[in-house]
Image (cartoon, rainbow, N blue to C red; front, side):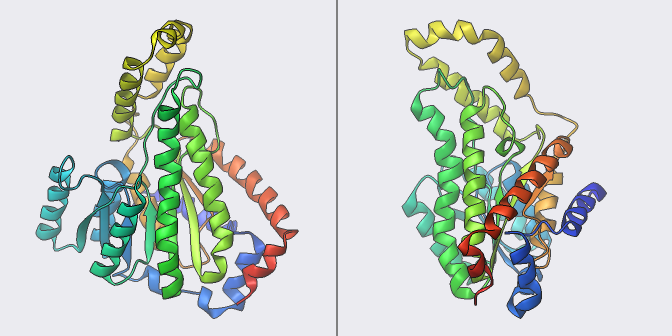
Length: 338
């Protein structure tokens, strides 16, 4: 594994950036149940969303090679993504990996419920959820029709919420669980021309934070990962495809107003170019290492990439504010009640 990734994880842990602040850090010492080891053993069951490409595909392979039983989910596994699904099945057979494909569309309540049920039927349990499915639909906020703006939120934030609703009851019943939510540096910083995407990542980070407090007493831990750089994945090419589709469907007024945004659009398209010096495997490896950490030692957030140094101080300031706020909230007593 990349040494810098290990350093990122260990240094963050030493700062005790634990879910929910000091109250949750205390739990590791006062309640034996929090010193879990089961989810870090070889053979843990990991369900990953959005494994047809990018980080999800690499995490699915990496977790399986690390000894996990992987449930790799993707939409249209029997149609558009059938070749990818077959590649993963062949890989699993060739390398004798426990890696299985389950069709799941995070845009559908029924699909998520059925996919999670199938995963539990296959593996018997879910130890780790990596909520990874996401899209980028770029464009000026003014020009984006609501359906395009909301596509970011529906997939990235509401899709993650569907996964929480489906997986948390199972984790609570089995007495433990880990949720890793994939976000972005743009869950903290705003990039013009990506307003819908930034809004979705701000929303999913807020939801993950709230969930962290709410499920703490059920021995479920929640961490957020923030890739902080233009990692070369299919996310960028898909973003350009969404953009071209959107402008093709603009009405006459929208097309006229596009002239105002000509320099913004040029900058946006340049910004969507991936950085060839970045390796998406670094992010996948960081998630795998994060999942393997002892319960109670995982950081609340982990930023990975060239903009990490800019995002870390923002995360630290947010953590300090959040800890101060939660210390005066009656829910803090529930975090240690068992």
